[in-house]
Image 1 (cartoon, helix red, strand yellow):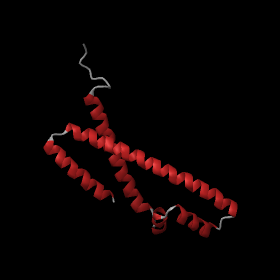
Image 2 (cartoon, rainbow, N blue to C red):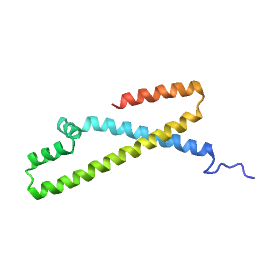
Image 3 (cartoon, rainbow, N blue to C red):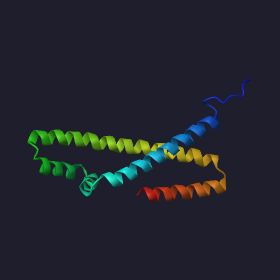
Image 4 (cartoon, helix red, strand yellow):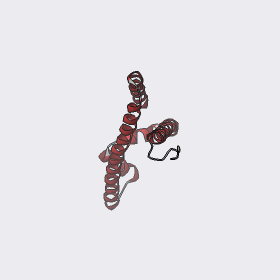
Length: 125
């Protein structure tokens, strides 16, 4: 028999998951830093708007025709539905990763890990 690890070996899967989560965290942090420096106050205000407010904002600023307004409204509907689905999928990936790491830790490490995750969540806001 070979001593080589296979892709289905738990240590290999755990290592890949840890690398993935570290990359995702670094990417999220990088995106957040870039977003803070690149977006001005009006674009920040736009991100806070709901679909209806955004449509009204576009209509006011762009003076959309009735046909354009209908088309933009349909696109915004699709966009917001897509974002909701994507957000749910991202949350599932986060939960899967956290649970996987948590299972590898002893009680003391798990307690500290939970604290680290809470601190990280608060820093993301």
